[in-house]
Image (tube, rainbow, N blue to C red):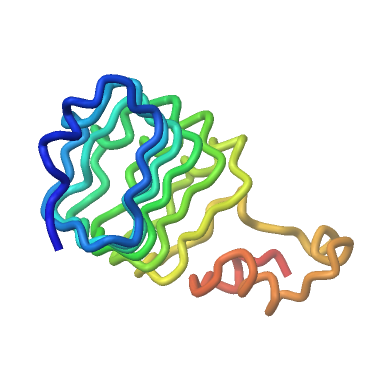
Length: 181
């Protein structure tokens, strides 16, 4: 167990930093790493505290740590983000509406946290998204309209209502009225 040393701030041109599956702990400050960093993977460590505010990143993997608190708008203040993996932390509160402004986002993984509230309709604005996992949280209410699949679409895809719930929402229980029977 240990912290990332201050030496990391002396690295001038660091584009990719992968330090997954270690026993690193404490808080992580993005300001301590190179301004050219675009890929950061600190998954499966013991980092804690609030989410680090990292600008200029395109790939951010923080899965399997102990980050806590809410997902702040400041954290999401980057339009370059392609992958946001915050799975398996201790995050709480609502998913901020601002997440819909991440126009380049292709992968959003928020499962296995303590997130609550409504699933924001703003997630429908993520036109580039190819993978989204919101499972194993405490969301409630209606499913946003962009996630609903009509009976004809289900039929053409060969998906039953049971499988659709399991496949699309993986643990989020929608109201039957949301399923457009």
